[in-house]
Length: 399
Image 1: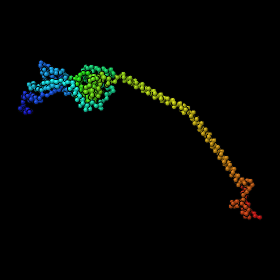
Image 2: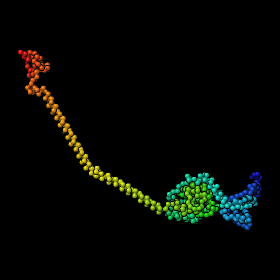
Image 3: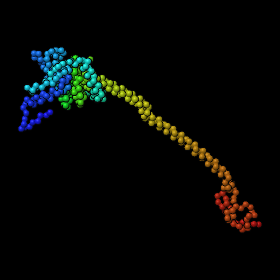
Image 4: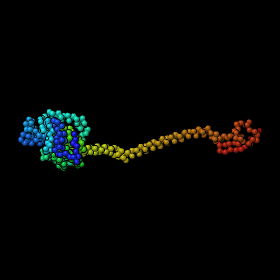
């Protein structure tokens, strides 16, 4: 029940602390999982700092040396402890009293990691569709690694050997232990917020399963999945496979391999440029040779090689056709003239004028009618006598 107090009726500190101790005591005994961040032994008592595996929260654990030495865990080990919450009202301090300690075995850790892997895969954090391509030549590389670690030297030296102009933005953090996941998350977020950083590399050397547990931390995995910058996982060796490898945009086997994958080799690129330039030169030369051959073949044709000769040949054909046309026309006119002459001769032969020129004459009545016999003529009738060249008017006289 809540204490009934007021400014006029306050309660002593001991009463408040006793109430707090009573409330905490109602929690009862519980099993707690965590990671041993610190271990101090004083006489027959061991003081442990138990850190939450995900959140930055820790609690003080007190146990006897006999209980501790049953398992004898080292700092950084994952343990499960059966504890009784205890609040010291005299000092106002809270601690957990350990009644039993159990080490988290490899099999149990693997089972938990497999369960987390299935959950994240179901959410789509491992899908290929969300993987982002790495830039061909990053201007600034963000590197998260241990302080003075060999992984840092491997990445930096190999990258600069391949491309001397490459720049790094290095964030050093713990890479194992209870604080590793939190520090790596902060480093990743800091680099992701930097607009100059084109790619982020998380690098660490090899180690045991327990050493690499921070890189399977759920908070770290979700932070990497939320990054806008491509992330490369270079954790451990080829056989090591923390869950970060599945969430990152690219997984490499070693930190040295990370430098080779994110930075192109300047010598290889120069050789490639030379090769492509030679190929382009060969293609252009072949195209020019084909076009020159076509041009030469076109120029060798008679119409192009000697265009005047073709004009002369066409002129000769025109002249020949003109001569043939004139010959045909002359022949046609000659035949037509002969036909006209023959027709004219026949007409002249049949013409009355020809008969008149032989000495004959035609007598015509006054109305133009031809006198065919003397009986048709009346005495004294005026007749016209037509000769070949002229005519004569006479009067008929019957005897």
